[in-house]
Image 1 (tube, rainbow over the protein chains, first blue to last red):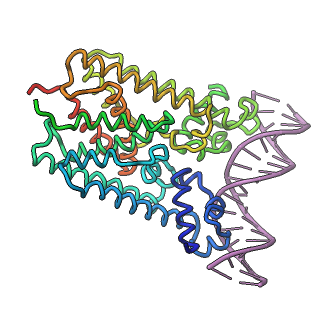
Image 2: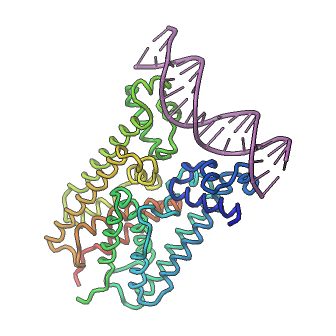
Image 3: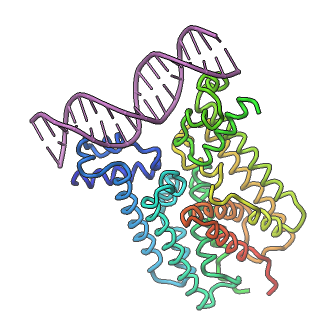
Length: 187
Length: 187
DNA sequence: GTCTATATTATGATAGAC
DNA sequence: GTCTATCATAATATAGAC
C-alpha cells in the first residue's frame, strides 16, 4: 500500500476509535509507519488528512448500507436485514460518532460528508418504507420520513447503549424492539 | 458560588460541549474564573474534576427524566411526555456523548456513572412499558426491556441525526416515528 | 518522497511564595 | 486558598538536507 493510502487508513482507524479531537498527527504517523515529513508532504495537515479519511469512510458506509437496501424481499425484510446486519457494535458508527466531535462540527468541510451520509441514509430508508406502505405492509399510520429517522436513530443510539453497557446486547435489544413495532401483523 | 462549585460547573459545560478528550484544565480554569493553583488545590487533577462533574450531570439527568416518568397518565402518555419533553437537542445528551469518549470508556471510574445512568433509564422505561402492557395499551407483541432500549436509542440517536443535519427537526422526526409505532390503536 | 532538525503553543501538572 | 513560577511532554506544524 502506498504511503498516502496507509496514512488515510491509519487516520480512519484513529478517527473511529478516538475521534478527531483525540487523534494526533504523531499517532497517525506511527500507525501508518510513516515519518513526519512524509505525512506533510502528501497532506496539508491534520484537517486535510481527516477530510480524505472521512470521505472514504462515508463512501464505504453508503456502499455497505446499499447492499442491505438493494436486496430481495419485502420492505420489512430489507429493513430487518439492514438492522440485523453484522456490525462492530462496540466500536460505534465511524460516521455518526463524528457528530459529537466539536472540531468536526465546527468545520463546514469536515461536517459536510457526515451530513450528506446521514441525509442519504434517511432518504434511502424513507423510500423503502414508502414501498412498504404502497404494498400495505404496515399496520400503523406510518410517515416514511419519520420511520426512516426512527430507524437511523435506533441504530445510532444503539451504539450509545452498547458502549454504555459494555455489551452489544443493548444494541440488539433496541433493534428487536423496533422490529417488533414495525412487524406486519394479521389481526 | 464557591470556587469548587464553579470548577465543577465549568467542567460540566465543557464536557458537554467538547467531551473529556477535548477539554483542557486551562479551559476549565478560564471558564470557572479560577487560577491554576486553585483548581489543583480543590481537585487532584482533570480526571478527579471530571468525575465530580459527570456524577452531577448523571444525577440531574435522572432527576429530570424521573419528572416525566412519575407524572400522571397512561404508560403511553408518560412515554410520550418523556420523548417530547424540551431538550437542548443540538447540544446532544451530556451523558450519552461520553460513551464516544475513548478516555472515559477506558477509565472504570469515569465510565461507571455513565453506565449506571443509562442502565437506570432503560430499567425505568421498561417498568413503564410493563405497566402499559398490563393495562393492555399496546397492540404489538411488546417486550418491555426491548421497547425501553428502543426508546432510549431513539433519543440518543436522535441527537446524532440532529447534529448531523444541523437542525433539531431530525430528532423530532425520529421521535414522532417511534410514537406512531407505539400509539394504541383501535382497529 | 523521506528524514531530521527546529519552533511555537498547549497540556497537565508540581513547588513554593503569599 | 490563591497566585505565580517552573517543568516535562505532546500537539502541530515548518525548513531544509538528503
